[in-house]
Image (cartoon, rainbow, N blue to C red):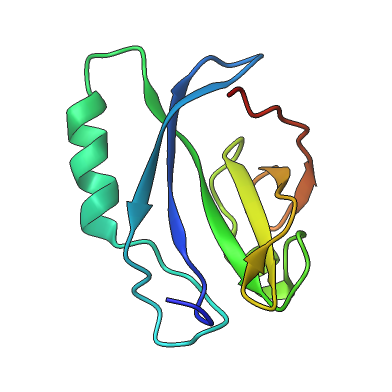
Length: 120
């Protein structure tokens, strides 16, 4: 809960072009309010549910309370899953700003911007 970071999984399909079909909220297991750790059990449960389907975990989202919509130094340090999408939502004065997308290039390789559209 604010001011702690929120987080969750992005479920979808595709490779060249990704389609997110579900956004799954997860408890933030981090003891620090400016970090996030998605509950591993949520991730394992969804990996099992998606086994044998065309869908998979394509990434995750998290917030940056009183921060920017860009990967933090901590995000850079813990990012390991190559080609996972990170959606970061800035929160200012308790209100969500415009989310930005980033593609993890792999452990120690950082991120590149990942433009996305939200269909309503």
